[in-house]
Amino acid sequence: MSRKISVVINTFDSEGVIERALESVRWADEILICDMHSRDKTVEIAKKFKAKVVYHEQVSFVELARNFAISKASGEWILILDPDEEVPSGLAERLQEIVVGEEPDVTCVVIPRKNIIFGKWVKAANWWPDYNIRFFKKGKVTWENKIHRPPQVTGEKMTLPATEQLGIKHYHYSSISQFIRRMDRYTDVQAKELKESGYQFKWSDLVFKPLSEFLGRYFANRGFEDGLHGLALCLLQAVSFLVVYLKLWETEKFAEEDIRWPDIQEVSRKAGKEIVYWFKYANLSPNPLKRLAQRARNKFF
Image (tube, rainbow, N blue to C red):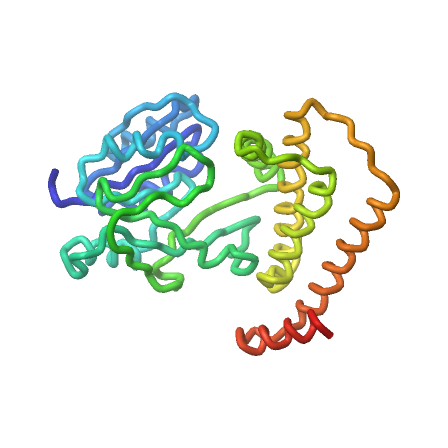
């Protein structure tokens, strides 16, 4: 195995975005496309960039095919890229510096990601720096067959600074319809995993799970700083949580459950209390220490 960099991209019907990704990694020693039998021109475009193409059966989320794709790469170092992502020149230069031995003990690199959603770079609500393990020595990082789980790592990590020049540029959701299509696919998997873990559905999940997701993103993680984009995304994320738990209920064949008026009152009281608390928290100082003091004061007084 030679000391070189392989870029690994899993694809399916990616002709609309793949060329931008490929153009940004022309500097790599090898580009490997793991395609799930695309019906469009994805493979044709990849071959124009002299990419090596292997095939994998179609799966519902990328982690199921990622380890296979990595196994087919020949480089000592692997860069994982999605077809709707782009590597800026500053990041490309930094990764090549790491490979030549500046950090001999490092086995993987944690890279920030710049998410472009509905045409805007979204920075709040946990969208930035959105760190991901994407660059590593082959054999040192493996993914579980579960959706959106961090990989298992052997060895020492390096975390790059959260700067625009070093962030993978991710052209994420471009429309509401795209968000909803992906949400439908991902929530199928998430509901199944909850079911398999033994989680017991409760009707109050339909209130508290989406509410907690919205309040956490919009207030605790200051999603309001991204204006209307922030509000829309926090609401959409909350809806996705609602759908997960509705689908969990569906796996129980829509089992009937009585909801008593006192229970509704109690759930409403708790939800209202949380909303009021976070409305207070929204006006907190961006300084972490001051924010902690203000949060404690709001909570207890």
